[in-house]
Image (tube, rainbow, N blue to C red; front, side, top):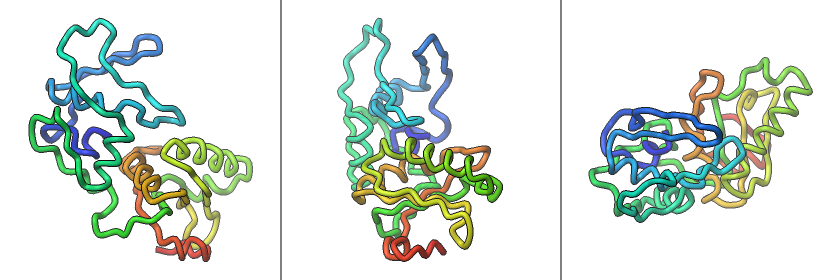
Length: 202
């Protein structure tokens, strides 16, 4: 999904043909040489609280391909200037799950479709969710606060307050469209004044 979200694919559809696990490594086959080269830009992408190392196999003997890493690509994507030397065709448009262009970027991110009311009932499970959320969302940037209301209009939503708008943008690009318990996550910016006033209504 990350390849499609930041426009690194050269045509519509899933660019991955096959994936094979071998010990602690995963080998991914993509449908075109251009998309395989573009995938190198995913190096350092956050996943489950860690940063993935993405590169060519050690026995690769092909041509060296200049590339950046996830932080570089994400920053360029969020600023609207994504100029990759390895892109051989018009990049695919970012899917509709990304934040709407007319939204004013802020330091607060609202996540929907991640939780159900049942998830918030048990105190121990609630604390685990808070901890897991903080762990998995910290790699996007400096995370100041995580709020998960248990009642009221904000119940079942997750709010992330980051130190900067750029960090919040990274979180939206990394989380929007992800699947959680068969539900597609929606990630959008949220009004920081409403957040400060504990008003979690849409």
